[in-house]
Length: 583
Image 1 (tube, rainbow, N blue to C red):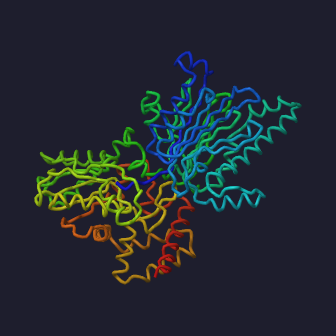
Image 2: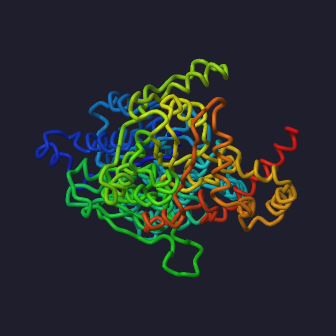
Image 3: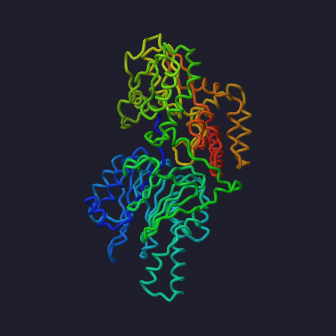
């Protein structure tokens, strides 16, 4: 319901045969480019602020371009980019990226891929990723201590510069090695191009970073790689046959693009890198040791990928979302006092539809008749050309519409499921107002995810505590009960003891039901007549439905990395200090 932005989607293709092979078999040398277009369009859900494409032609003659890049802003960026490409934009290596910003920065200079140029092919580096680094200050200071002077302060640019620096060192190592072997001139270049070890570059680059990422890269000499963070926070999938190697952020896009079965595709493991050398040799290497139980890399694959971000067409995600919906039966029955006969079930379009199917399937197993209706429609995406608050809110209230006559007024309960409730703005400004027009006996608003209590710092745009309705409700309870001392204690602990998430103490005195009740009070529009009750997924239910994706820090506050803990403590400090200033 409330659109969350996510950073980002990636696609890589490496053609393993000569270009003439694809022209003969598929009728075009643009086979790789056409497949890249499909991979990107199928992942459009992951980024609509901009897109970029890069290509390397390892057969290009000296003195001609061999590394191409195109970028564009806006929701139509993919179409715009591919319209620009002529026959020169053809090669063996392709990279695509779709961007959603979680930092508020916009402009073409922030669109991936990022490119670092050099006259030595092997030193050219093109980089893109689905990532958010939580310790960019530390990496920036590491670079500047070495004497470097980065031109841009941002995780994408600084990652490029650090990795580019290590790539330079790898090339220089091979240059010295080639000279020791008695090689000269272009023989040295060929030796370097044939022996670059991207694993060396990554082993000396990626341990500097704290955060969730899938980082992808191409070099001018034809190396390609994709590496996943050692906690497994962000997802990546790959496929290989004798014609292509493919990497993407989601499995079903590879299935659809190449007509494959789910079991044909592998998931890149935490701390693992897929490397394709310029010769076409493909290999997997473990950059981080995640098998040792003493390492700090606790497996924390993002559960929000399963609930919301990834496409519901994935075989496993589809079943997980159905399970999330079905598991909510018991609290829903309690909320409607068991009166299923006088209850209409519905959902907020569009990502909650699968959870809705699971919820109603569960009810049908126990009850003969279950009344399911499409009560809410997403009407139009209204533009924000009106900036005055009252007028803008009035427009926002009409983003959704209802099916009039879909329930019996003052007699039927309405159970309506969404995938998550984050800020609550859309509920207050739109959903509750329009549902009240149907005059249901009671509205039970259901979330297939638990209460979102903490910001995410690994690529989702919820970085401020006070934006979260669960946090605002909890603060309201603290104030009502005269517990200001708790806030002051947490504030001091956040400033002086950074190794633990002290914000969890804010929620500890209250039950989920108490916070739910306060959320309803806060989000209920003036004049609304219908009683409202909230039902959230439990933490236990989440892990039952998504057992292979234990990352739940936005619900529990259990951040997998030191950077996430540091940032949530700082977010609370910022909240308290802004609160004092506003008073």
